[in-house]
Amino acid sequence: MTWGVAIHGGAGAIPASLTKSDQKSIAEALDDIVSKAAASLQSDAAALDVAQAAVEALEDCPFFNAGIGAVLTREGRHELEASIMDGSTGRAGAACGLTTVRRPIRMARAVMDRTDHVFLGGPAAERCAAEWDLQLVDNSTFTTSHRKAQLDAWLEHKRPADRRHHATVGAVACDVQGRLASATSTGGMTGKMSGRIGDTPLIGAGTWADAKVAVSATGQGEMFILASTARMVGARMQFAGECVEQAAEQVLASMPPEAGGLIAVDHQGRTAMPYTSPGMHCAARSAAT
Ligand code: ASP
Image 1 (tube, rainbow, N blue to C red):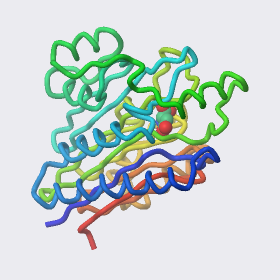
Image 2: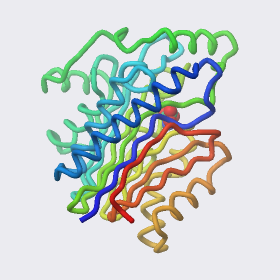
Image 3: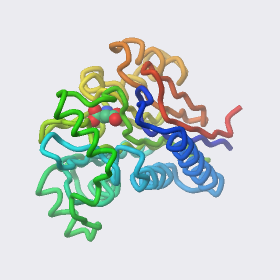
Image 4: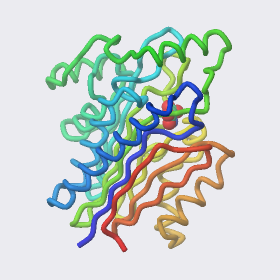
């Protein structure tokens, strides 16, 4: 019986604005969240629930670009997106254009569990969230002073001072029954156009899970969409017989330099966390040898 879990808090260059104490807090938050996820897996929790719970905890942590602490559009608002996939059933749920849903990953899970669809977006999705009793908050609830400063820098220079720092969050898990799941959540990119949709809510781009691997990506979303990144990792394992490390590295190597990174776990609990950006906030635990 084996299990494995990996989480990320985004790929990119560590911005100068991030103090040493912030970096320590980020490392501690990741360690705490991955340890809790590992403990749940050891207690026989399902991969899907563990991946979702880890992303919820990351959405609550203001350092990351998801939920509280999400980046701002050029109009100074938050448009959040998330997706989740259950590799054991092949089912998935996703949502985008969320402005008031407190935990976007719960919305993605609700789309998967409560509808025949995979992807809901915009005001109609938010009406469903209200019907489903998901917590709704004012859009400003997600704003931190750090994200305001990032948007001000973007508006001044038409690019954020630390534009290569992404902080989207994600989790992949393999439970003791060998089931795999992946979850990813983000605010997108600082200064994005209203209505822009990145890779995060797109099944096959930012999120993928099947019987062999679960993947969650982070980086410059347009590149991940064009490369079908998350699905390609699964495809290389399925059709080329590559192991999780090889598949993950090869897919990233085929993308433009510094595109970002990804986390992956296979059905034996082995994890891979490659990145081509200068860094990636991530952590993993595994019982695989
Ligand atoms: N991939 C995300 C996006 O493009 C950004 C990130 O990873 O932080 O929306």
